[in-house]
Length: 73
Image (tube, rainbow, N blue to C red; front, side):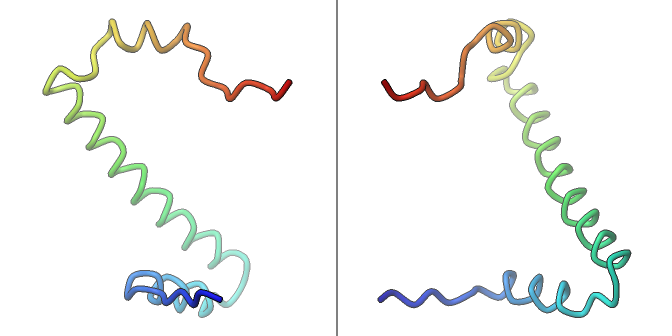
């Protein structure tokens, strides 16, 4: 049996969620995390756009791309 330990960030998040007094506080904490990761995603996408990895041609190609995992046969 493997025992996984949590890192400092995971412990802080767990303690924060454990301290939520009600559903409204829980939702507020979830919004903070969502906004944090959305901001990081936006920054990374901007970086990819600025360095030319991501451009309109790539986006147009992705729009028509089938990326779902195929069903088993």
